[in-house]
Length: 129
Image 1 (cartoon, one colour):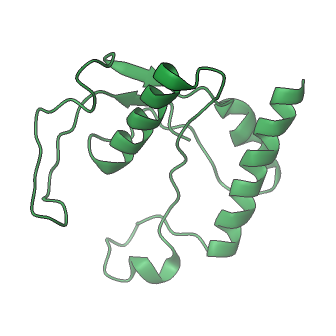
Image 2 (cartoon, rainbow, N blue to C red; image 1 turned 90 degrees about the vertical axis):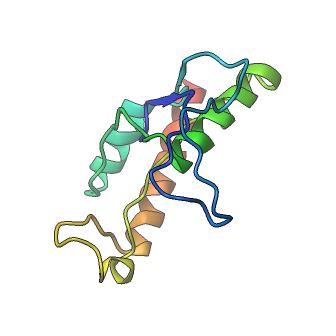
């Protein structure tokens, strides 16, 4: 579960179109950072109660994941303040990690699906309390 998205794009590699943004703001008129507004600790506990590993991360990086999270929270802030939002990182599927370093995190797609279901369940329960 990502906690913070920063208003910065600092790409370490080019995107699919060959562009490589650096020192660029996600949104020119946006604040320095946004915090996720979903109940991260409740989500993590609900996933762990299902015997699936989960944790809170304090950096979504400064490229695609961060930009997606930042832009979502920016849109919520500017247009949909009654909605909550956040970003959930998932590990590689086992077959995706074949050429990755030996300790690369992996998880079966069925386990990821169960974890995401637990996350949604936690958000709904928290909202109804």
